Image: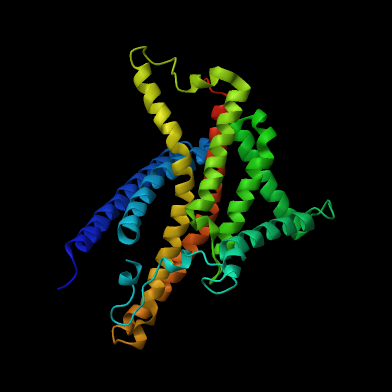
Length: 78
Length: 259
């Protein structure tokens, strides 16, 4: 066992930040699932809503990317 | 910290090494080193040359029955034009050239970055921030030029109760200024994350050379690289699409600030 407590903190922090990716995965799944549920109820309206779908996916996913960025910063920049 | 992450058991893990911007000529320290182009510049230039090549070739002989290059060029043009028209409205078509330029640049840089051993400039936040903040400044200036002080009505929700409006205005203002940050980091983060994941699996691939576990791990990791690569082909296109459609959404806000 070697290394110092600051390194340990970095690794634990990066691991905790990775939880954010899982949360973003839930969000993205929620958006896509609800889109599919709506699209199967009214398939004729589905095509006009794909743009909204992608915007929603992008917003949900961006926060996961932020979590990933925090993990990267902790690992390599701090 | 970067050197701590590599090594350990003979395998090398350096998933972020591929994102280092390096000058292509000269040794470190000598003056030539500072004035040669970097790999990021080179691949951006290749992307621009590829776009110019496709569109010069595609529009050279405009035939009724399009050649391959012509139909690709027409499909891309029609796709983005329809997107701008659907999201930003007919007035948005005046700014179609700018949006089309952004879309093509991001699309080509993303796809060229997927070639093994190449470099993808969109993984650099510096590159995407220039595009993201460029859109932000352009859209804000456009809003004020077209609507003057009425553009601030974007933050003042007239259809909400009066007592809530200042609170909503603050929230709207914050979300407006976070836009360029999320707009640029989304693209860079997606591309960087995807390439880093491929590199991590690539780090496991040579395990068969040093350990008996490798018999099971190496084929799995190579399969994983193929699968993630397939996903990345998808992500490269989708991120270009998302960046463009968000630009259209922001443009719509500037053209019609009164919700």
